[in-house]
Structures are given as C-alpha cells and as structure tokens.
Length: 359
Image (cartoon, rainbow, N blue to C red; front, side):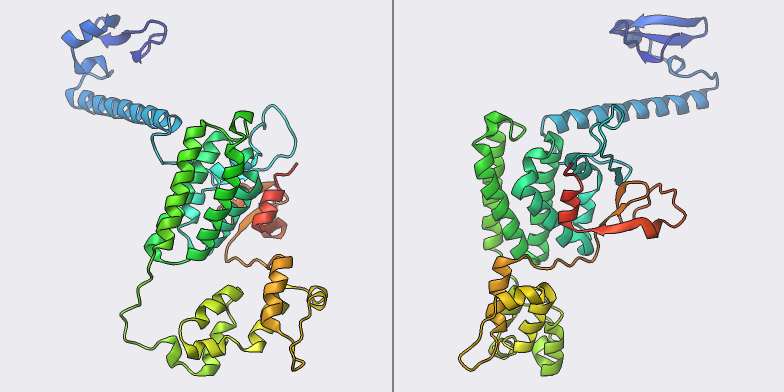
C-alpha cells in the first residue's frame, strides 16, 4: 500500500495522490510540481489548505521531537525525560515484559521530581532522597537517570539562590555528593559511572561552583515595618520555637539577637527535642549531668544526633499501594482496583523508598 510522505523502502522518493491515481515521484519532481492536492484527498480548495496545514504541522512536531531526543542523547539540553503517568509499577520479579521497570533509575525518571521541588511540601523530601542516592545509589542509576539527577540538582540550587531559603541542607547535599564523586570518578573505567570521565569532572566543577554561590549568598533583611518575632511576648516566642524540629535551627535563631539567644537556651525546649527524636533507652545511654545536678539537654541532643539518626518529618511523601504495587505521589491518581484504596497505601520515608528497590 502506498504511503504519504517518505517511503522507508526507497529513500528520496515518495508517493503522492493525483487525479490520475497514486504516482511515485522523486525530490526533484516534487520541487518542480508542488501542489496542495499532493497532500490531501478532498477536491475543495479550503479543505485542501486545511489538511495541508495539519500535515505540515504534524511534520514539524515530528522533527522537533526527533531533534529534542537527539539533543537529549548528546547531552545538549537540560530538559529531563518525563512520562505522562506520574506513577510506577514496582514489580519485584524479573520477566521479559517487566524488565527495567522496577529499578531505582526508572522510578527516579518517572515520578516527576522536577515538579516536586517546586512544591514546598515535597522540597525537603526530594533533597533528602537525593542525599541518600548520592551516598550509595548513584552508580545504580542509568545514564538518563544520572543526567536527570544532575539537572534536578541544578534546579534545586537555583531555587535556593532565588528564595534564599533551605541553604544549609543544600550545602550538606552538595558536600555529600562531591565526596561520593571523588571516590567514584577514580573507578569510571570499571563502569561505576555512566559516561566519559571528562563529563563527570565537569559536573564536579559545577558542584564546587554551586557551593561558592551558596557561600556568598546574603539574606536581605525584610523592609517590612510591621511586627517582628522579637515584638511578641516571650511565651509566644517559646511557643514558636517549639515548632522547630532541628536543634541547629534553634542555634541559628539564637544568634540573631541576645534576647532570642537567652530564650533558645531554655532547657525545656531541648528536652522536648531529645524526646521527639530519640527513645528513652537511647537517652539513658547518653545522660550528661551538670555540676549543679541538672541534665544538660542541649549537649545531650547534639551528642545523641551524632550517634543516632534524627526523626524525619515531611509534609508530603511518596506512597506505595500494597494492593496494586504502584508507587505514586499522594495527590496523583493511580489505577488501583481496590474497593478502598486509602486502606492499602502506606507513606514512604526517603530511606523506605531506597529500600523498596533493594531486591
């Protein structure tokens, strides 16, 4: 059957429809006899023009898609791969049909992390996930997933520079990633990382540049003349400080002014932080008593944080459906056939997400 457009069996020639029937023409004949009737089937002039515009438009879309795919493979673009479905089926068995669709790299490509970093509820979750991947899972990512990882990292740094928020966790992420790459780059010839060593050296230089940009950031004081934190009563200030779940944030807040510094030394604040992050057994193993016989809760907190991991708290996380084995964001629809989908879904911490693909 003849084809519209280029015939893959005979390069340089194409089939066109004329009044006498289908004819095979070359590129020279096409240039000499350009007609609207070569691209459409109807005889009316308005319909012919309309069909021709649609055909040319579809051809331009195909050419743009091919160019985008070629640029992506050549690393000439920073647009990551994306999929229409924002969920992934986690299949723990290895079959011909499911091969490659249950790896950490495939999940990283398909779960739309580029949009997640724009959401304040998911930002810290994605940053923590990138940090865990940088520590031990970066070699397990595919080449496309590793490229997406670096693109997402660049977007995160740019967001922090623009918003002037969450500077410390991004610095820790960059430091962790740089230390990991220093060891992995030495084993590039052993297929630890995908790509040429010059590409990874260039990426490490970008990481150093990101660190310099974050070190030079200057947070401007707001110009608002309204009420500030120091204008509130001391009881309300303490109530606000109790909402902070990281002791380093309390220390940074205490460095703003002497009044806040004295409030951040409140023993009850540090006691609640210790009880929130650590178990009673862990606290009893690291008891520290002052000369006056009081427990040094602040010193105990930082000592415990060096020995045990802190309790993680996120506004929004990835969810896993045990009924259909699908991993998805909470506000994303997934094809679950259960009568009550909410009853079979569980929230995953970043470490749980990593462990889900350890099989």
